[in-house]
Image 1 (cartoon, rainbow, N blue to C red):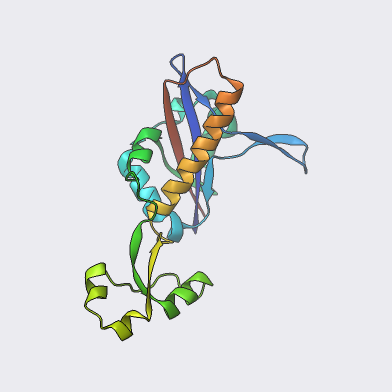
Image 2: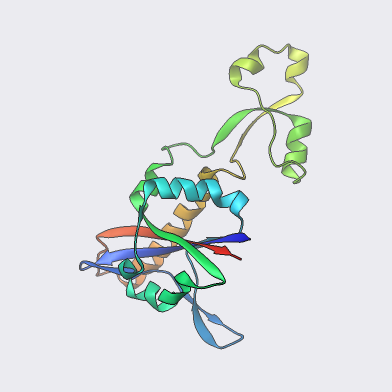
Length: 198
């Protein structure tokens, strides 16, 4: 059993939710196919992000989807045998943005052993131990040379994914505004759909 996560962008215009995701031509069947705002196919890497989005958002029903999302997802799919949909969640884009503190670029910062850092950067480590500034100052000068100050995001944490989601939303909104320069969106939300694949 595995999990798949699909995030879609919707904006409210004239009191109605509209799907803002792009459609891309799929060469195999020569049809336009909806490209989700963001997707993940790994429960271990995305679970913390999903939990955070669940805390921020609210469960919505299929009937609350924009017409564009209803075209993409057949209502029966949510009760099918091969897929089990966990309740769709709608999360305000403002709430997602507010989770990232202003001026903070990375989730973690500290002093890391240079040997561990090299192994981390080439993909041999998923994570590593680090020292705080106070702990680093307690080391003698010789030991300090083995460490380097470093900033990073956890591979399993929500912080990294939220930054990526924000970048994707900003890109989609820029495209939407370029085409719809005379129309205003009153609200923006991310719809999160999680499927458990049997």
